Length: 143
Ligand SMILES: CC(C)(COP(=O)(O)OP(=O)(O)OC[C@H]1O[C@@H](n2cnc3c(N)ncnc32)[C@H](O)[C@@H]1OP(=O)(O)O)[C@@H](O)C(=O)NCCC(=O)NCCS
Image 1 (cartoon, helix red, strand yellow):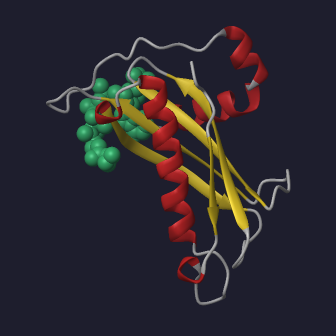
Image 2: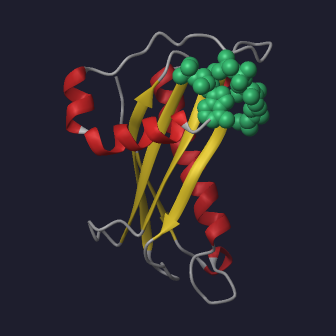
Image 3: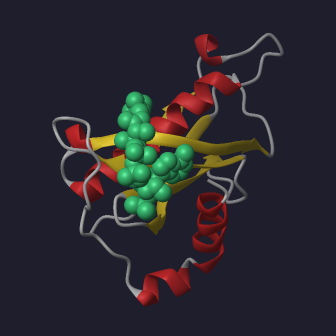
């Protein structure tokens, strides 16, 4: 079961804001797209996956032109029809993430009706990823 993916982007002129740093809107697009790909790979049917909520995105540091930003995802929690994916973004391989964020997806059929995906996380995986699992559960319970 693939639970992690990594996608890299080169920050170019068109990705910058008026301060000359990576535009939050571009980063949000890359984060949600990466989390969507992670959820889709898990389900195996990208056409069945829709985003229901972007829980947040925090910029801990900025990135600038010429930087290589790498999004690494982890499945944070699975409900019966939902998949919550957490992402962290490393800049130029600095292990301290510059950006973190999370999004929840739902599996839907051809009519857009949610269905149970039948996936689960092992107790071992949950223990190994306790912090993001608990964060995802807290976010989910807010709805
Ligand atoms: C996503 C959608 C199908 C959910 O419909 P719904 O009637 O709320 O679905 P359900 O009540 O059956 O809930 C399904 C799951 O979504 C979760 N969910 C529903 N609303 C949520 C929210 N606002 N935030 C987080 N999770 C949510 C539920 O908790 C449930 O999770 P579980 O299986 O872990 O218990 C519906 O809201 C929708 O079609 N939204 C538009 C999606 C879209 O266009 N996205 C952008 C393009 S990808």
